[in-house]
Length: 197
Image (tube, rainbow, N blue to C red; front, side, top):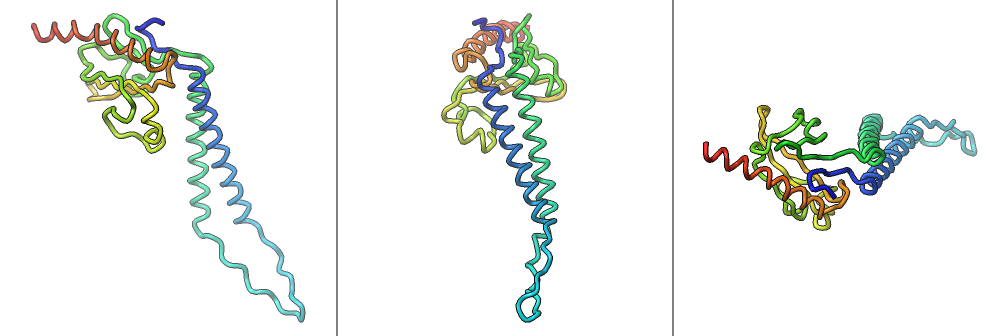
C-alpha cells in the first residue's frame, strides 16, 4: 500500500454506519412509544354499582421534552450513519501527503484545507487509550483494543488535532504506522530548515 495515502476502510465504516443507524431506529422508536403513551386516552368505564374508577395517575410532565431529546439524538445518529455510509460507499481518501503538505477531509471539517509539514507539532501512532486528549465514553470503552493516529498541528486559526482510528482506514494499524513514518520523513527536513534559518 502507498504510505503517503490513507483510504477510508469499507468494512469499518460500514459497521459504524449500521451501529449509528440502529441507535437512530431505537431513539425514534422510543420517542414514538412515548408519544403514543402521552396521547392514549381510554374512556372511563363505570364500576359495578355506578361508581367511577379513580382517575389515572398523571403522566410524566417532561415527556414532550424527552421526546424532543430522543428525536434530536436520532437525527444526530442519522447524520453519523450517513457520514460513515458515504465513506464506506466511496472509499475516499482520508488523508494524503503531497509536496510536504498534509491534505484531509477532516481538516476541511475543521476549516483548514491542508497543513504544511512544519506546522505539525506532534505525531503519534499508539494504542488509543494512550493518545493525548479526552476520549468520548463510547470510544474510551474500546480504546485498549484500538490503535490510532494522533496529529497535532497549528494554523492561523489556532491549534488543531486530527485523529484517525485503525478501523477507519484500509490497512489498519500497519498502514497508520507507514503513513506516520512517511509524514515524519517529510516533516524532519522542514523542521531542520527552520532550525537553520
